[in-house]
Image (tube, rainbow, N blue to C red; front, top):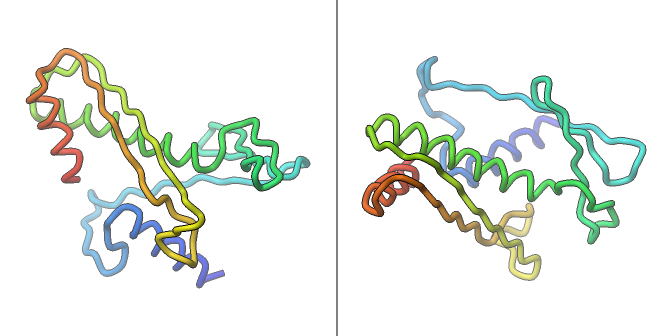
Length: 150
């Protein structure tokens, strides 16, 4: 079990481009999040929870799962897109850029015939597209550049 946890931390650090080992962090830099997931009586259907929020997740039909609810890959991408919206809002506020609305579209591709790594499933590519209302193109580019630098 310990090795699995280390592998997950290593994969997360690869996905997000941060070193999760040996980094010195002050208490204000440290944020811990918790979520849970558990199987149900239906093969491939999972109940996920974070705080008091509960949601259904289905494995994809290609794995013999129901595929009716959001899939783990879609949930992951949705989380990344939500992070993009929230972080750009924070950056706009700190830069005094009066953005009126933000939307992020995200698309990820997994090509099982050309995996980036052989030992885990990873996206081959992830593309984000930002749309912002009420600001100039230059201001929008500034916010996206700040987002990419985080």
